Amino acid sequence: MNTTYTDITSWTKFDWENAYGTRSKVTVQDELGNRFFFKESLNRYPWEFWCEVIASKIGQIFGLDIVDYNSAYCLHDGIDHFGSLSKYIHNVNENESLTHGQNFLTALKKGFDVKKGTDHTFQLIEVFIKLMNDKNCKIDYIIEMIIYDAIIGNRDRHQQNWALLHKIKDRKKYLIKNRLSLRKLIGISLLNILKEKIIGRKVTPILSNSFAPLFDNGSSLGHEIIERNLNRFTNNENNALENYINNIKSASHIRWENEKLNHYDLINNISNTYSEIVDSKIDKFRRSYSKDKIKECVYNADIELGMRHANTYLTKDRKEFIITLVEYRYNTLLERCGNVS
Image 1: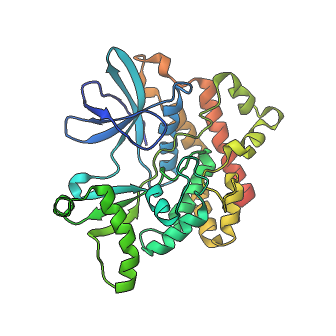
Image 2: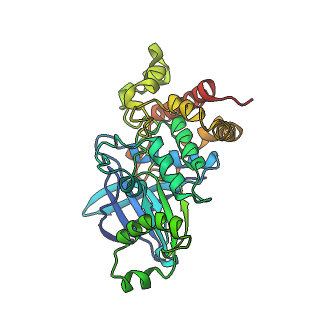
Image 3: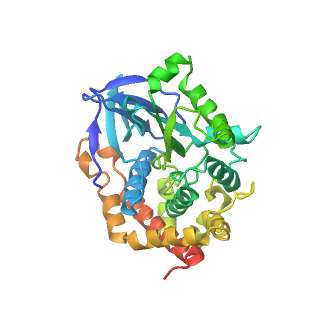
């Protein structure tokens, strides 16, 4: 759970990826051939990559299946670059592939709004999971993800920020033989899911599916709140925290029948159908929650930097704000949604 700091200046760097997300992301490779994503902050939120790092550590405290993010530095063309570093989720050499949720949802709904995500609803995800009918791809994962987002305040769990992992038999051989790109293979496989149900036998080379570990969790922890406003929230002046978490701008990206809701109202609506799962997942978070561990991970996030890049440190005000916000959101979850003792 400790945060590491890595100088990747000497690592191999590939062209900037056309990867999903809003921040610049580059693929890098270490001396052993392992590939990683190096992801910088938006210019207006230079501390944002720290939110990615801390969010992943908080997820680990809760025992979630989550991608591990750490801090990294790269000197490129005479310019210092700082960002989060995370290992590739899938291993191509082991015939693994990854498909983002958007690929599935656009196949299910014609004209799916990929820009604003207005069609990214719990109901459509529910249809997809029922159609998959896969014991490794249950609605439990989505519910746990939403509860986690409620605690860290993730506003950007869009349809490209969750995914499935696939094990594919003889991946390269199959693609070459059929002259397919991996994207086309996945598309064909999606269509064949229905065929498999009709003819009763497997017609795709996909051996197994599972939800990918949680990733891209950085649009959270109040990342958009600028330094001069932090104390107002930390001290909860004029109910600043309550107003903040109920603001429509802080709502979950996953909608309820096309309506944007705050995370807690969304969870309560889901609970009307999946009460046992919701209660069980909230209880999991309750049993593993530790303010001391969260405080430790926040305060130690940048400890590996030493004095090398002091201007990249998280300020004490931001650390205190993050700790206060997580505690407030966690307690709000229990108050509004928790039916466990």
